[in-house]
Image (cartoon, rainbow, N blue to C red; front, side):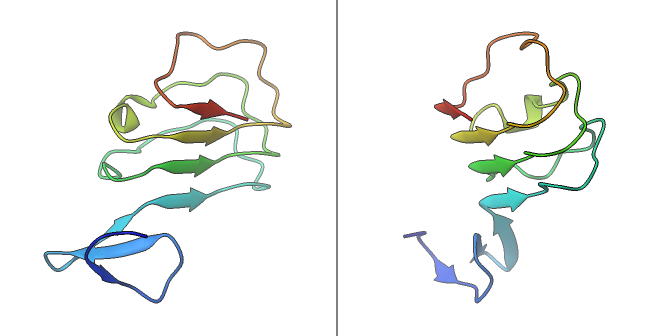
Length: 89
């Protein structure tokens, strides 16, 4: 359970007047490239499965908080460098 006042949207909590997203699902969107993740400094779960992603990059803004990364059914050949996520699916 998230600390703070719960929002009625799944994966979101409010803290000091602003929403803090914990879980973001972008699966099945034909995404080819990951960009502009700045501001998601509370994100713990990122679902990118069933897209067209060839290379995992631009995940640095999530390095401290990301626990799960879902990237199955993409066009990935390898991970460019180790990620701190506890689980990669």
